[in-house]
Amino acid sequence: MRSTPNILESVPSRNLLIAMCAVLALGACERRQVGGRGGDAEKRPTAQEAVADEREDDADAGRQDRSRVAEEGTSNKAILLAVVSSRLEANFAGSHAPEGKVFVALQTSWQNIHPKQEVEKSKLEGKRDQTRGVGGFARGETAEDQEYVEVDVAYMIPKLHDHVYLLADGVAYALDEGTERIDGGMDPASELLIEKQGEVKELEVLFLVPEDAEHLALQLLDYSYGHVLVPVRGKTKRARGNGRPPKGCIDEKATENLEIATQGIDFSDAYEGRPAGPGRTFAIVDLVGMSLSRGGEVRNIVEIDPTQYLWVTSDGGFMHYAQPCDGTRGRPIRFTPEVFQHQMVAFLIPDTADRLRLGVRERNAVVELDVTERRPKEMPRARAVHTDGDVMEVLFFGSRRQANQVILDLGIRPLAKERGLEIQLSAQFMLVAGERELRMDAGATGALPHPPPRPFIVPPGTPVRFELAFTTDDIPTGLRVRGFRSETTIGLE
Image (tube, rainbow, N blue to C red; front, side):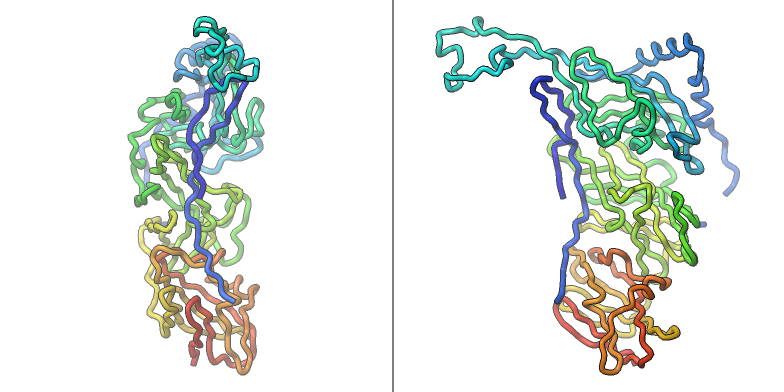
C-alpha cells in the first residue's frame, strides 16, 4: 500500500515543488509458501442532441461561444478553468465508443490567477547566508531595509487524471486514454504546469460517458485552493449528484475505505476486440465506487488491481477473477473521493453461467454484491475434508475420468478471516497413482470448465471451488495435500 499527499501545489516558479495526489492501493495479499441476460422506456434527450448547437463551423459563432463559456468558467484563488467548447462523437482518436456510450471532447482553458508572492531578493538570487539565519538584522538592518521582489507562483497538477473528471448525472468519469492522441491533448498521467500569473493554457480532454447523459460538468479536485466545477450542459447540481450512488443500482456495500455499488451486467462473446473462446463468455459488470479514505483533511483516491481483488462467483462456488483487458491495460481501477466514479470490469466465465455474485477485497475486508437477479447456488457438501491447522480446510467433492485424465473437484475454505492465502498448486496438490505422485497437467487444467482462479489467491473468509486435471492411465488412489500446517492423503476410492 502506498499513500502520498493529495493536494495540488502552487509554488514559486523559480523553486518548483511537486505534490502528488494520494493513491491508496488496496488488497495486498499475504504470501504463504511451502517447500439476467426490456420494455419501452421514456426517451430522454441525449447528450449529443443537447450540444448539437456547439458544432458551429462559423468563425464568428465560435468566438461568441468561446466568450460566453469563458464567462461561466469557475475558479478558486489559483486557477480559472473554463470549457471553451464541447463536441460528442461515436468515434474519436481511433477508438469506437461501445454501444450506449459516446465520447465527449472538451476544449478547456486554464489561466493562472494566483497572486504574485513577495520574496527577499537575496534569497531569490541565491546569496549565501553567513549570519546563521539572523540575516540583515546582524548587520544592523531593519525589516524596512530588506529588499523584496514579486515573483510568479506556478500552478501545477502533478498527474492530470488524479484531479480532472467529467461528472454525468452524479457519476464521475475519468479521462479517456485517447486524450493523449487528440490534437491539443496530453498524456492523462502527466503533469500540467502553468508557471506565470495570467498565463493561459488550452487543453483538449476526452471522456467516455453514457450517450443519454443529461447533466454534465467538468470537475477539478483541488484540496489546496478549493474544488472547481465548470458547467458543460444541463444543471450543474444534477451533474454533481448528492453523494449517493445513482438510482437503479442493484446492490451496495461499504468498507472502511470504499463504498461500491453494482449497476448492471452484460454478457458478450467478445470484449474490446478479444474473443471469449469456445465454451466461454465475458461477463461485463458496471460498477460505481467512491473513496472514503482520508489523509487528514485530504481525501485519497482508492485503487484496486481487479485481476487480484475483484471476482465473480458462479453456481457451486467457482471463482473467476477479472481479466486484464484493454480497458484496464494491466493497471488498477480507481475510485475518486467526493463523487461516485464509474468503472467497467470484464470476467471470463463458462457460457452456461447466468447467476453471478461480485466479490471485492479491500485490504483484508471482503464484500459481496449481487449482479444478477438470482444469486448463484451454494457450494455442495464435501465428501471429505482435511483441516490444515488454523489456516484452511481442503475440500474433496469427487473425481471423474476423462480419456487418459483424472479430474478432481476440490475446494479451499480459509479459516483465517483476516488473511488471504496464495496457493501453489504444483507443490501442494499431487495425485497418488500406484507408486507415483503426479503433479497436475497445467494445459489440461486450463482447458477445464472450472480451472483454478489465476492468480490462485483465496480472499479472507471466502471459500473457493476448482478443478484439477492429472494425466495418467493408472488408477488413482489418493490426493496428497501439503498444507501450511500439515500434510495428508485424501482417499479417492
